Image (cartoon, rainbow, N blue to C red; front, side, top):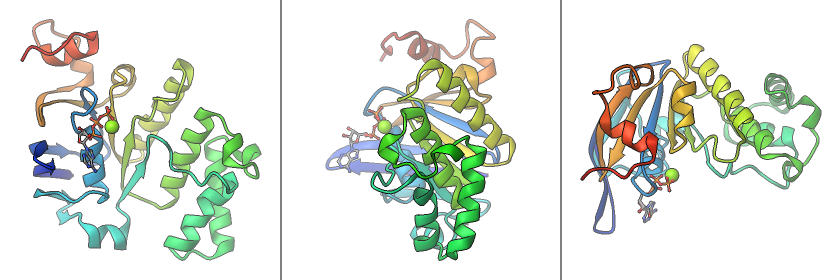
Length: 241
Ligand SMILES: Nc1ncnc2c1ncn2[C@@H]1O[C@H](COP(=O)(O)OP(=O)(O)OP(=O)(O)O)[C@@H](O)[C@H]1O
Ligand SMILES: [Mg+2]
């Protein structure tokens, strides 16, 4: 279980995340949904220790996730919206480089891990190309492969489908679902409501720093009276404040 416990975060005098608590079972997919600027990426950044919490705690399997545990165990991997790949390196080097530099994996071993991951993500024939020569969908897969190489237990994905056409969105959704089936815990920040249809996931709608409604994706459309706020968001209507 990944637990976000009463977490708050301000930038300047603006409270972006206000006392948010979410329990996320291992091997599940969680979607943080909400308008631009509502704090979705900020929560992912706090999960992956790129941003410190002002108040509250983040726990995983009974242990706090903080700077020290993250440095030591790399529990949380982040797939960034802009991918943050090394554009001047080859596709394969994007996987081997962090393995060698961060985890001190020997070169030959890193090469085996990278070759295997590139095969899994259908990128073997791109291995020696520069990242700048890849399409958006290929970059997304490489970013995910690079994150998985570090053996995280939790994978945070920021707008994973923003650069993808509908066909690739379905394909990436399938990959995400498979990762959850393999017991990775996945947390996604997105406003792409198509993902809700494609994933078996828990959806949390954020407004004004709070989670204002939560639903299991398969239940959203079951009952017309339930989950009005999520339904309004999905339909593109402004929230009723
Ligand atoms: N390092 C920072 N310094 C100052 N303000 C920040 C910082 N990071 C985020 N913010 C502000 O916090 C708010 C939430 O940002 P965040 O990126 O979490 O939103 P988001 O929900 O992911 O939006 P989007 O859908 O556009 O990606 C925004 O107003 C943003 O400008
Ligand atoms: Mg964001």
